[in-house]
Image 1 (cartoon, rainbow, N blue to C red):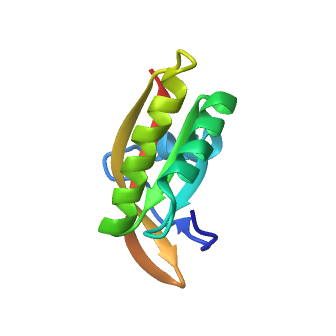
Image 2 (image 1 turned 60 degrees about the vertical axis):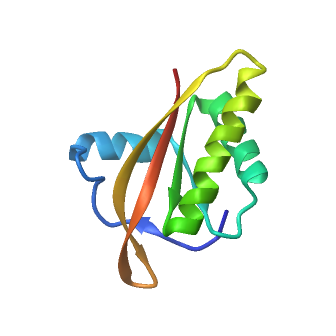
Length: 112
């Protein structure tokens, strides 16, 4: 996870403006980098899911997305031990980083 400040510039592709706003209010956003440890991200995902039932993971680039997907798989196994099943819905989202617009992968993770 990184501490980089990135803010959504536009809604996720394929989502209505109201859907996108609802996700921003109800899901904690976890930002994943290439150097993120999947097990640490998985623990954060599992904790947010236990607390609020939904989490959002954002990644930019192939390496970061690889770490994010591994983290979702690990979090699923952590939560499965507690009888919680999760699903992951991927989407694209535009984010601003250092005043530059980038396209990120957004993984919306929810209880099934």
